[in-house]
Length: 248
Image (cartoon, rainbow, N blue to C red; front, side, top):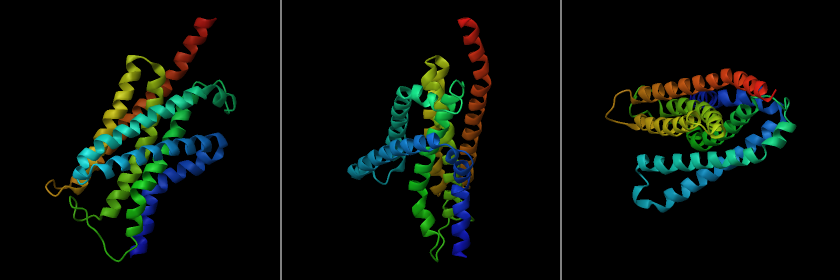
């Protein structure tokens, strides 16, 4: 029965991002390089968070405080990675499949978000996945009828998709330099904190079905983020046509 749990949780947690890799990322060497670079920045963020957690011994068990600096460092490294991509954007566009496409920046953000998603999902869930092979089952405190392994797998899958959308929106926001752009960046930061704090409901012993509420919050943030990306995709052809008309 433990093997069934292992493979089921494995597919739930990593199925979506593995599908994205084989169907999209792996088809382009440029995408693979951008993914590896993004994963490196994410590893730096996780390393810094781990160092702070190790030094702050008095608040190691307080997850609410750990989320504050962990999310902040991830967002800071997300901005640093954007600055790196911005400096290399001309060269990246030259070797892109469509060098003059208005969607290239969104594509770079999507691929960079995949690097973040892959790294965070592997670091956060791989140890729990290995424990699911054991003979015992740990039940979720807020949802006693579900195991911690399954709830963590669903959370990992949702956060991997969220990181892809967050990076895409952040790239669009950083590059626009308008109030709408800063609003998108604010949404990324606020929703990242909101989704992270929602995970605390999984271990809550006082809130019944807290894991359900956490999943609903994460799904709602994912839906809104996808809607923002869709809105940006619809606006791209119009803004590009407007710029071309002003030049002529």
